Length: 207
Ligand SMILES: O=C(O)CCC(=O)C(=O)O
Ligand SMILES: [Fe+2]
Image (cartoon, rainbow, N blue to C red; front, top):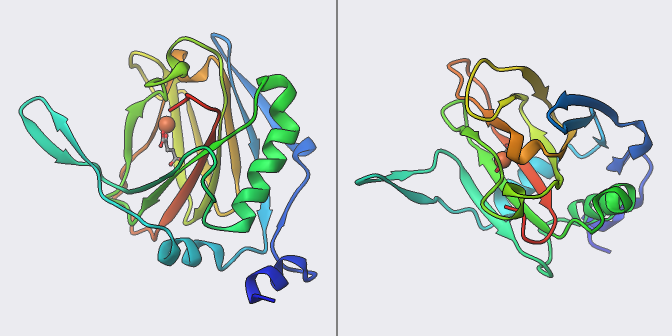
């Protein structure tokens, strides 16, 4: 048996906790976030395995007359594509089992972001290129590696209303109207910080 599969069943190996322990915070405007620190445990190697095993790429985006490089590496697993690690497959199954009735559909896609250091970031945005613009939905994020804060503020600007450090194994789920009525960001930091990988599970048509 492959050592990875063997370790999944060994005691003290990687595990995913009970999602019944999530804590919900109502943000207002129909938006909420659920948090479960340390949902994923004993997966010390997972970060490094994803760093070396995932087909990361840079993305360039047109900004007015310029083309800018997105400050993080990305990889996207669409519906039906095998995820890069069995623990992520299991995480998605458990998320669908827990949230499926409230969400009304399964989590199907996985977007991965690798923030190599404090210069990598994601600017203020909502996930509303797809259905998140018009409909309530959920985006579930598992954070791996070095802690980085997730910031939230009502859409359209203003001061940061929520600042939650996301550490190794932590789960955050943004739900309700969160994608269309709130924005979120992972800011750059001058503090020396190692790499972080975020795995975002979304339903079909949300991105
Ligand atoms: O890194 C994160 O946890 C957030 C990423 C994000 O907001 C996105 O990719 O849409
Ligand atoms: Fe996002």
